[in-house]
Image (spheres, one colour):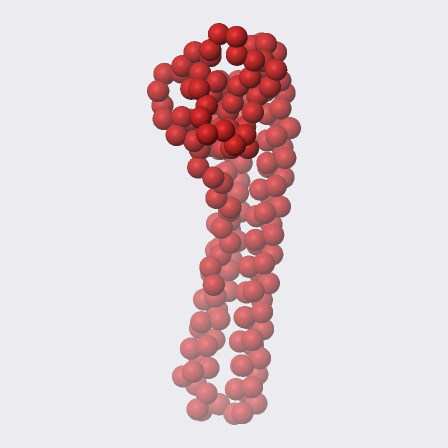
Length: 177
């Protein structure tokens, strides 16, 4: 059984992933797009959140690995010593092995829930902090809407409408850590 892993978000669209000079916004544009995943990956706020999730995931994985090591040692002892142990001692050891197995399953479920909860809390916090930044940019540029490229379902987005790097810069400037 493997330790819980933080959920992997979808990859950023190719326009946001490449580091080319920004294309100017088309004249008269009234909306823009951005890659939420790229903002989360590139901004200081997003990187700090990812580090928190990784720290918790690593801690929980280490705890589970420690329990699994205990279980393996007990199973090995049972296997090598059963022939010289009393039936009651073997029975007790079997109960201990079963209890450790249940403990590990519970630890895995609990760890997964804790990581999911932390991830959800951080995403909610991230949304609360990014919305005012998006509103500010929209007002500065006279935009009617800014869409998340992942949620918009667009097949093609003019590169000049991609506001990802601008949003990362403004978010970092607004929430310096």
